[in-house]
Figure 1 (tube, rainbow, N blue to C red):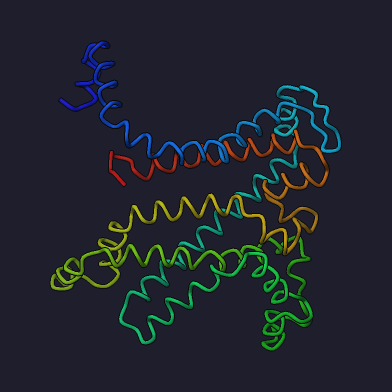
Figure 2 (tube, rainbow, N blue to C red):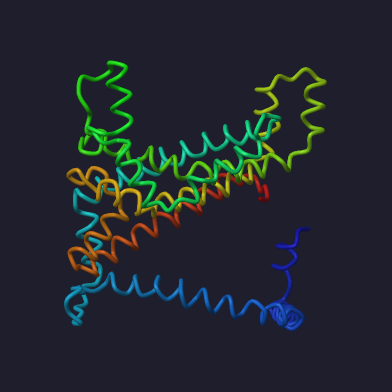
Length: 312
C-alpha cells in the first residue's frame, strides 16, 4: 500500500501528532528559510495581491480617489475586440519565439558538444547575445532592419530580391516577424547553454552501445538524446515561455507596439493602458488576466509533460 493510502487511513488524531512531530524535528530548517520566505512574500506576494485588489477599482493615476467597480474591468476587457487581437498576437509571439529559441538552441548545443575546432571560443561567443541588455540588442536590430541603411535590405537589394528597401518594422503585415527574429537571437544562447549542460550529463556509454548495435546518428538523437533531455527541455521551455510572454524591452524599443498595434502584446498593452493612459485599474485587470493565463499554462504544461507519474 502506498504512502498516500496509508496516510488517508491514519486517524485524524494520529495525523495531527505526526504533523507536529515533523515540524518539531524540522524547526531549524524552517527557521533558516524563514528570512527568504518573508522577503519573497514582501517583494512578490504583496504586489500580486495589490494588483488583484487594484483591478476591482477605477483608479486614475492622477488622483488618489479610488472607486469600487467590482468585475467591470474584466467584463469590458473580455467583451472587447482588442483583447482577442492582443491574445492572438501574444500567442503568436510566444509560440514562434520559444519554438525558434528551442530548436536553434538544441542544434547549437549538439554541435558544441561535438569535437569541433575552437569549441571553447564558440561556447563563450554564443553567450554574448544573452549578456547584452535587451534594449541595446533591440536598437541594433532596428538598424539591421532599417529600410535605407539596414544590412538585411542591403543583402536583398544586392541579390535582386527587391527593387527598393523594405520597411520591415513599418509594415503591419511583417513587423511582428522582425521583432520575433530579434527576440530569438537574444534568447537562443540561454537555451543552448542549458541544453549543452544537459547533453554533457548523458553517459557516453549509451551512444557507444547504440553505435555498436548499428544505430545511426538520427536514431541516437531520437531515442537517447531527446528522452535523456526531457526534464531539461521542460524547465528551459517553461522558463523561456514565461520570459517571452512578459518580454517588454525588445518590442517597446523596436516598434512601441506599432504599427497600428500589430506588434502589441498583453504586456505592452498593460503599460500603455495603465501608465501611459493613466487607467491603473484597467491595466491591473489586464495584468491579472495575463497572470492567470501563465498560471494555467504552467500547470497544464507540467501535468502533460510529466504524464504517467514520471518525476522531473
